[in-house]
Image (cartoon, rainbow, N blue to C red; front, side, top):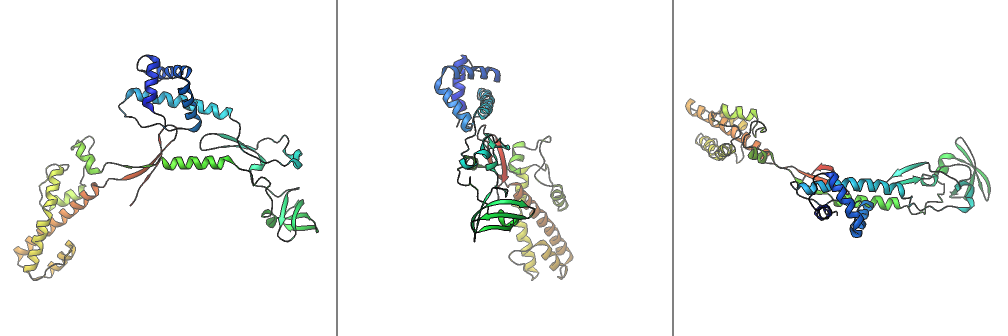
Length: 345
C-alpha cells in the first residue's frame, strides 16, 4: 500500500513548504527520488507491483495534490518499465526443429491485467494439424502428419501410412510446449486475488435519511411520499402541512393501530369479527352485505378509507427507509473504484 501521508511529508520536506499544485508536487517528488534511496526503491517497487493507495480524507488538500502527482508519476514509470521489460514467458524449444524456431517473429501481443505486454509466438497458440505435426493414435501409437488434403490427413505410423479424418486428428495432436510453465497464468491469478480482496460492501444512504438531511429543501428534495399516497391521505380527510414533514408523517403512521382497532370493534358489534390479519378489500366486501344502520355504515367506510391511506403511507415509509448496499472493488494502483454491483440478501 502507498501511504499518501508519508509521501506528503517527504515532498514537503524536499520543498520546504506545502505543494500548491501538482507540478510543484512532481518537482518535490523528483528531489525525493534523487536523494533518498529508500524512497526510490519503494517508488519503483510500487510501480512494478501495482500497489494501491491508502485512503485519505477528502478535505486534505495537500494529500490530494500529492496523490495526483504520485499517480501520474507511477503511471509514466509503469509504462516505461513495461516497454523495457522483456517477456518472462518460459518456452521449451525443440532443437530438432531448429529451422522452424530460428528467426520466428511474434505473431501478436498479449497484455496482462497488470499492464505487462508479452510477445505471442506460434507455440503460444493452440497447435494445428499441419505437415510435420506429431499425433498419438489410440491404436497405432505416435505418428507424423505427412499431408493434409481437405478433410483427409495422411499420417505415417510404425505400421505404415494411414488416412484419417481431420476432425479426429485434431484431438490427437501432441503439443510439445504443453509442459512449459506460463507465468501469465500465475500473474492473472494474483491479479484476480488482489482484485477480489480489494472489494468491500458500501452502504448508501436511504431515501429517508437523505430527505432528513435535506430538510425539505425544494431545490434538492424529491419527497418521501408519492403523489398517489398524498391524494389517498387527503381523500381520507388527513390535513397535511408539508409533504416532507417526517415527524408529521410518523405521527400519522402511529395512529394506524388505533383506527384498525376501531374497525375491528365495530365489526364485532355487528357480529362479523374480522380475521387476525384482514385487508381493507375483504372488510369492504363483507360490509356491503351486512345489515348496518346508515350512520354506522358511513362511519365504517370513513375508517376503512383512513386505514387504507395510512397502510399505504406505512409501506412507502418502510421502502424509503431501505438503504441499498453495493459491493465495490478498487484498482490496485490508484484505489479508484473500477467495479460495483448491488448486494442482495
